[in-house]
Image 1: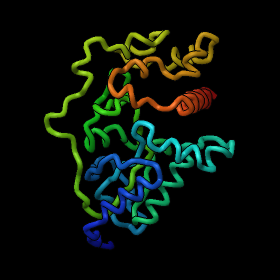
Image 2 (image 1 turned 180 degrees about the horizontal axis):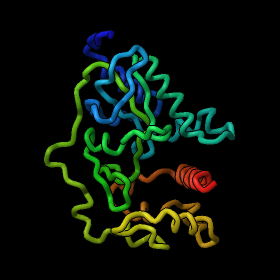
Image 3 (image 1 turned 90 degrees about the horizontal axis):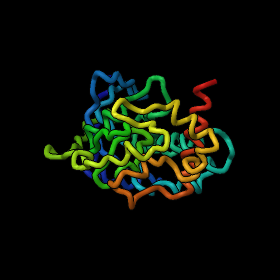
Image 4 (image 1 turned 45 degrees about the vertical axis):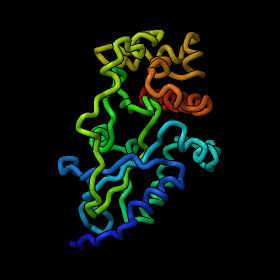
Length: 240
């Protein structure tokens, strides 16, 4: 089996700069958990470090909006753009690319993210960030054979939801799709497809909008509408 060659000292800086040049954001790194069963890299070496890549606030939208994928009228343009740009990063830096949307297998991106950043499970089931609130996402991960170290939340990091006693995210949905019991997907989708769901279709999820954390980092209206269309298309596929 091939052995890992040490990376130059500036490797992480060059990798983060290359990620930023795509419009995406470096979202932390972690040692690969053996129980996740990641496949070996193309050269046969086992993966040792995962470098998460994603979105934060409005960063990345303009790069996608200017891409050929956003205009070719084919399905899943954001996923295809993510595969192209993250795949190019993987080729350039000698990594394997993994995606949260390309399963099975479905990789545990939420669990990885909570090890790499100060993000916490919110009452909506989305991960909340103390700065970006609910306005962020992961688009992929780069798996490396080398030990590149880890980023991790501070031991004292606490979910911003802890101090939110009002929890407007659980009371704003017009059909009460969110509760302590979880997310009622069927109720949400039925509302979206009804005449009464017009505002949610154009302005986005009211529950997500109600979160006071990072509200100034809300996605642009164009992106909100795009994501709602993508959500509805995915639900439609699931019911075929």
